Length: 482
Image (cartoon, rainbow, N blue to C red; front, side, top):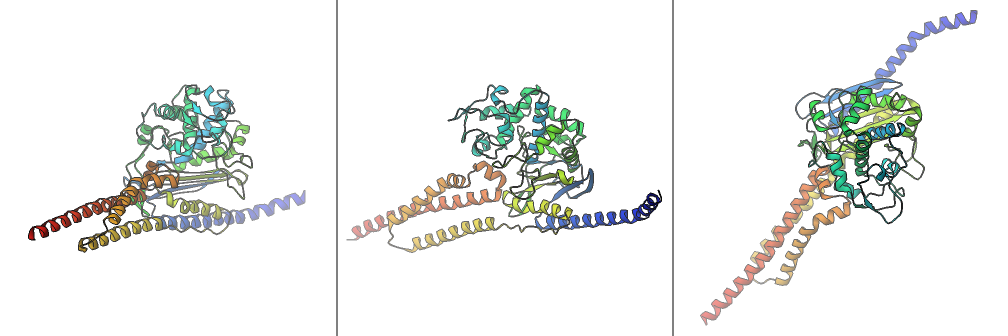
């Protein structure tokens, strides 16, 4: 008994010191995250951002920086488009419907979407699980044709976009290989509507957002605007330029939900500790890494090497997001930013990697970001323009020219100008519309190069024709003189 009393007294004496040490450690961690974020925002020219870190059931860090495009200051409740971080929320909806018996994950999708057809050389059907795991066989290029579009009906946009995709020819056998494609989650959104007999946004709001207390989260344009959605920023040569607020009415299932860091911290807590929405078994399935030969789970990415934990990045042309959870450590975080460019994606990844490092007691380091690709492309445009101007100056001064050479050069310039976009998209493997959305400065410079080539081609042919006409006139005058 005496030992118990002594131990209790020692504990009571040590408790204040332990508490102070923990507070000091948390304060130091917060200061390191502050320094990391301030450096990142300045280095990457990010106008506004919000970060929340959850550890052992508590939001241990919550901070916001900068402003939105309307001049309002960013807070924990500020609305951002969350891009593909929407996909884990859609996956949660599918798991809920599966547990309620509304659907089966291994059932062919035509069970729920009998009007949706696809062409395949195999006898295998696309299942709901294939859509969730990004192994449907629908090619990414085909998906780009129907995603990130504004020309959809705001109430029936999901069904409209899915109908446009219907009839697609599969690039691979369903279940055979991973190919990340937002169209898979577009179809999942259509299935949610078909099974629940509700609009996707109504289902998400009544069944997920409201129960989790995610009061600033939306899955449709009108609700997003009412909760503060404003245009974000596109990046031109690394610098933010206010966008036009692109929003795809059919895109909520895969990338156009809007939310705040405070709301997504609540989602993180649910993913870490569960709740009433789904069973522990269902939650475990969502957090389970895919088989060794696969790269994507049920709505989540998992690192290819090292510790396996669910994470997802997201991007729209004007916003960028990232969220991860580490269930074994009780750790998770979400970062939202209002600027994006595809060539800056790798640099942005280092921000959250830095947060993870700090939470582990390790040193953080931001990746370098530069606009070298844009500057090199600009250099090519200027070089071509300078060479062409110099060549025309020489052409005007010459009395005798190689007409075949100049006409051939002009024709070649016109051919390259006409086919440059097709060649560019073939090499990149993405649609030109996608280039314009996520690489706006590169798209502009390609247009400039096309203009330079076209002008060169036309002027070369015109100059040669003019030279030829002038030579004929000179010969005619000489004959008249004799």
